[in-house]
Length: 348
Ligand SMILES: C[S@@+](CC[C@H](N)C(=O)[O-])C[C@H]1O[C@@H](n2cnc3c(N)ncnc32)[C@H](O)[C@@H]1O
Image (cartoon, rainbow, N blue to C red; front, side, top):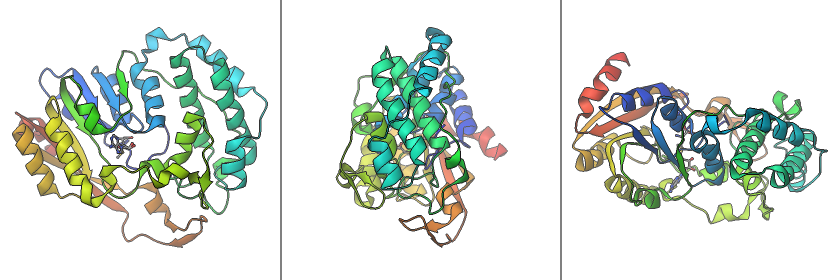
């Protein structure tokens, strides 16, 4: 799995436990799925999952881990494809020039392999599923040899130790069962004519844009060559591609529209105590739509960048953050929310 700001890696067991405790729940929606970790946890627990996110790279992860049924894929064919891609001769293209020479996100030798493999995927993948699996393998391989703190707003001043390792493709571990993936704004996704037993909402909670923070994954997946700007060599359209959830003045209306539009019996929502919205406001909104609301506070380490310190755009450490932990609020809303949250509250 790729390193990701706000990833719910540690919370997956609690979120899945809440979803499983909902009587008769089978169909789940992960509306801001990001890495798809939560959607994967739900799929592994037997839910039929729909994963949605506005990011193109997230849709590729979703096609691989959520939409694809492991039973329908020939592992030998996947291994053969990845071996063929891994053996391609390196080629100095856009990724090498932009992200390895004009910036230092990857060693140039690995950048040239990313360029070669990305072009190879368009030639050699025979189906959309193979394409998604190969792109997922490429993103995860590139993530293992990057030279960042996990965000692509800046690269490290000194090469990270992992960046010296050669990039290697590994087959993603697929899950049994089928699911669906959408790549669209959350408002549009909830307007679809589909009902769920439970919807999980993990919206961005502050001004940090995912499109800007993961611009390299967007570019690698799209395979385009946008004009880059600044020291970080971000795509020019980062300047104009904004999520309402990242805007203090718009986040509340956006969340309100999504929650009130949800076609689900229950909702699980996570939010940080450091975000734009208060615990009380979220409770009131969920109560308006679902009736009963319970909340479990979970103490969490802050994002990796905070733990590594404050860096400027050139990757130089310029300060320390004030604190290293925060609280994730885990809300559950529905006709029987308190009963569902009780065991988890007791455990936490
Ligand atoms: C906190 S992250 C979700 C992390 C995810 N739960 C995980 O564990 O990987 C928020 C996600 O919301 C997505 N996003 C931002 N604005 C959106 C919008 N308007 N509609 C749908 N997704 C959006 C971002 O691309 C990002 O992946």
